[in-house]
Amino acid sequence: MAKVRVLYQEATIVAARTKNLHAWKLAPRTLRATMTSSSSHDESPSALPVVRRFLTATLAAGVVVAIVVTVIYRQDLASQQQLLEGAARRVLDLQSESLLLELSAVESDLRFLAGQETLERFVSGESESQASVEREFANFAVEKGVYDQIRVLDLEGQEVIRVNYRQGEAEVVPRDDLQAKANRDYFQAALRLADEEIYVSPFDLNVERGKLERPIKPVIRFLAPVLDRGGARQGFLVLNFLGARLLAELQQLAGGFRGETMLVSAAGEYLSAADPTREWGWLIGHQRRFASDFPAAWEASQAAPPGDPAAEPEILRVAGDLFAMRRVALGHPVRETSSPSDNAQHDDNSLLLIAYVSAADATAPSGGLLRQLVLLSLCLLVVVALLAFYWARTSVARERQERQIADSEARLRRLSSQLLAAQEDERRNLSRDLHDDLGQLATAISLDLRSLQKSSAELAENELLQRALTETDGLLRSMHEIARQVRPRVLDDLGLRDAVESLLDEYEQRTGIRVVADLQMGETSISRVIGESVFRIVQEALANVAKHAQADEAEVVLATREGELQLRVRDRGRGFDPQSQVATGRLGILGMRERVELLGGRFTLESAAAAGTTIDVVIPLN
Image (tube, rainbow, N blue to C red; front, side, top):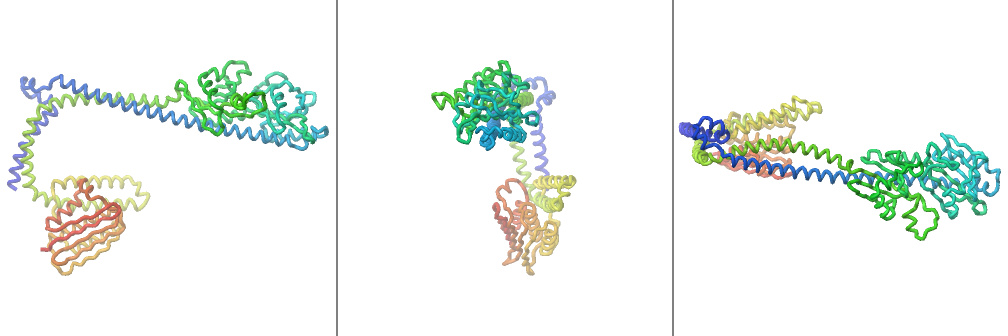
């Protein structure tokens, strides 16, 4: 102990001198004030190296931050563009499917009505069937609620039957109010139909007696030939499909889409838009057209091949704006043309579904992120600049003290090595006692608290219990830290067999882990030192099983054979990597190994992930 005190005093003197040098290195301005002015002038850091290092560090940080911000912004921008394209495709898929289903239903209704027997009798000359036809049409109009008019035209274009649907009620139009439609485009197109064909008119507004009906009423007209009993064509059945509900449904399907959706005619006219004032311009009398509002996108859509309703919508990017387009053909009436493909491409009753997102809307989320990143980067650069200035000054001053500090630290290391060697025996005993006694007690408390926590859902959320667990873990860490400096003293003086049996009983009750024990001690005398060490090894090994192994059973074998004490502790839990356990600096395994080696024994540990852990100890009894 006298040697330890002498070495400690000498090391303290050298450490104090080295500490002063470190203090000068870390705070040159404070220490420089205590020195003479000439010494201060010699030792003060040069301004040029400080400025150079400050600028280098600040600029490097600025470049790194700028690169990181740019990469994050571009990745977010690309991600947002992909999300927008996907959203636009989904919206157009829903809209085109809804549109085609609605039109298919109208076509089915048209064929159903055209094939009615009462209508066939009427066009075959049985005028007494007219009332039945009108009654059927009226009932059908009320039931469906989507047909503004149901009409029968003769081959001259004159209405012979007409049922109007207004505000939930059907009205049969008197003969005197029936109109001639011979000059209407849809009638002229119907004249060219084959008997099995259906004509679908362009989407427009309803016109009555040559004037636009007010309020405006979007309609699509469906026509089918009507045949008499002999199969001769006698006229046409016309359904005026009310388009307002369909347009509203298309807009509803686009709910939640960041941009806007439009329905555009084959001529580039707005049929439906986010701004209603842009709609039906060629009929109402204004000049707002999609073809003129977005000429580049319109030209690209016209240059593209005709769209397949089942195909992916075409994605166009024009000056940062995003357009997704899907062309839907309402029908293909007979028309004079030299090319079938030309019919499909320029069919004047086809519709163009468009999802549009402006460049500003497309980049708005990424722009907001960029502003936040720039603000955060500026704040970060201010902090970096302050730290860089401090680092530049202290590093320049520190370099001037390196040689002096190196000499003092070398001497201190030599003295510290001698001091640690002299203290090793004393610290070994103290550290072992501190770790085994208080450490095991704290471990038991932690296990009890965790068992209590698992006992009920209410306790699992108890704040005080959570805090106790946290503080117990902190206590364990503190004791492990202290145990590296001082070593524990053996306090347990029970006989080995009785101590182990008591430990196993208490362990099973506390943890719920079943222990299979085989204690074959016989009458062999075991020294107190060996007994205490073996007891602590068993205690530490079982504590590790409860804390880490996640096993429900452990095995303890303790026997004396041929002048040796043999111990085996085994579990079939999750196992671990022994090398990683040593690297963490925990003293459990190291303490067990040290105890065995101090007694001249052999310590073996075998473990692997999911294969359990086995500890074998052999200690000579002499």
